[in-house]
Image (cartoon, rainbow, N blue to C red; front, side, top):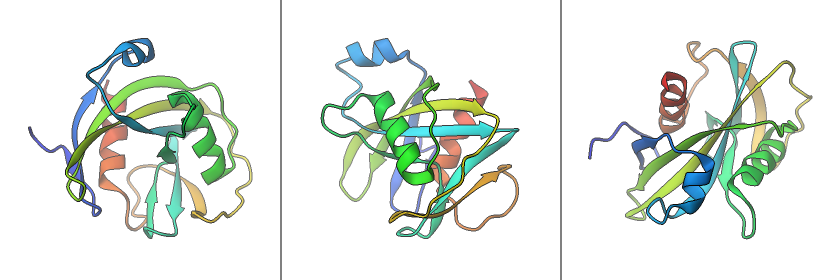
Length: 156
């Protein structure tokens, strides 16, 4: 299978599946789903956060906790990482990822929202800053898999 993008952590983006949230919940093939992403657009720019641990910019995302829905995870991670409270997300599909270090396949869900303002940011133990990015300006290291995921969402 062709690798669409790879990041410095050895995660490879293999496929974008445009499925409905209902179909994903009923699927036995698209497993394991381990994380959710929150892609947020504000006046044509995209909300990104600077991760202290990885020293790179990335889209808000994180692991799904036990008992949590994919959507609840996206909402929670967005708030924890950026202090943004958004509940009106549109489900955009799922991404197939191969982790070279762990030698395993996993899936990530993607949620998207258009908003008209950004709340004040509060630095936290994971993220040290946020910004609205035009996807073109050089901002330093950015997760290549994250960027390709958004590109695929915007094309579909």
